[in-house]
Image 1: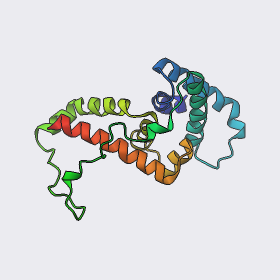
Image 2: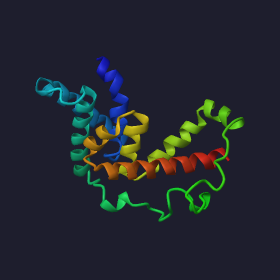
Image 3: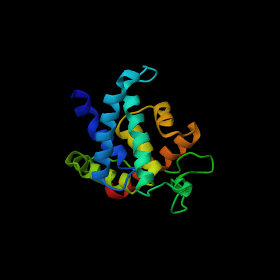
Image 4: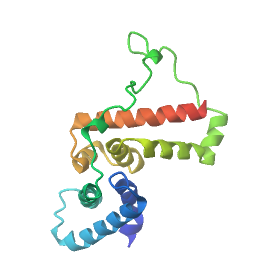
Length: 180
């Protein structure tokens, strides 16, 4: 029961990036727990139990997402707006900041404590293309390592880094707009 309480919210969050609704994501998470119960005797310990559970979820969510006609086109890996992740004018010719990022001290700190910024972050993550949303959810929300995410989502190291950078850049941009 402790495992379910610990991982259920994270499983549902990740499943939502594969399937069309929260209800379906919750079903996929339940199917995952059934898979864990039915397959625990085959767990070989080559990965952590957490990684194994999430791998079961990813496999089931991908299958369910395809069944629900929600496949991820390769073009979703590209930036939708055609803009660079970070405005190039923020950098000099040598690649260093032309002017450092603004300080977020003072009033924005109160906003962060109020939870409004978290809502902005969550809303922006929800708008990301599915694969970017999966990567940033696993890395920054759930705390998985790069190798675990790469293996869970069947990505190359380079692709995982690019997807994470693009996702973080969009979230950062939304947060900067909110805080300015």
